[in-house]
Length: 313
Image (cartoon, rainbow, N blue to C red; front, side, top):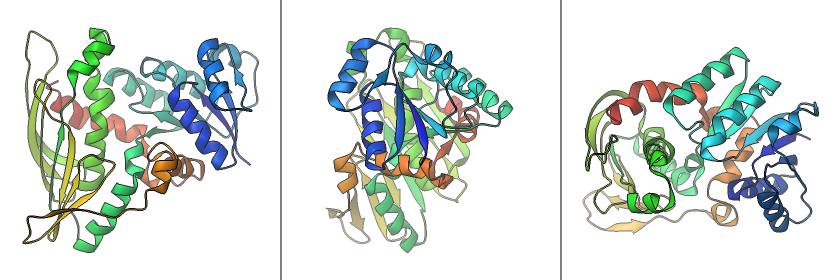
């Protein structure tokens, strides 16, 4: 039986613990503050949290686990993952986007390579029931011919909840969910042209547009306007259908020569019992079925070749 370290006792850590229990996987839970640890234990009866943080725990020289899941806050991802790799853990599942900046993600990729560690980022939408069903339809139709997506963020919600410095990371930490889904289904960009517009004296863009061609020969386009109403959307087009992820937990379909958009029946019982995508992505990580997982190398490559361009950097 595998032994897993679960780092982080917030809401995401609780969700991982539920999945690990359902998979009958022994896991050691490591938290920092007493308040979050107590809330975790209250919501997960029978589970005990090791308090004091990862650094204090590592000072006890515990035996290495088979793998670790990192579910700490956005600003802590880099340091916690770095410490675990340097302690000797060779297989890690880290909450997206892996670090709180492009630069730290690149550093972490180098650290992982130098220590021969496999680091994967938890893009749970790759395991949504809606996406799995869409893949079946895409395969039957002969592949994706084009796709488009929107990653408009509700900036007013973030502005109410976070300091301004955090707002600079919204694209990286939040919009990346949409981009990962679109490129996972339609292919990685081989060519891309990007445009941005900055508003209100900010030094980060609020309006985005662009287009390109993927490595599967599919043309794509995107847009986002954080200063106007909108939502996350991904649309995939084949020779026979247009597939809508709007919202992304659901799947709708439009047939050729029809204007009707109809819901697609999906088996989403796991997405209802657990946080969507979490059960299957965690199971894949534990069983080392890595083909659907996002590696840190892939993420670092996207940063250099795609994300910087989209952000106007």
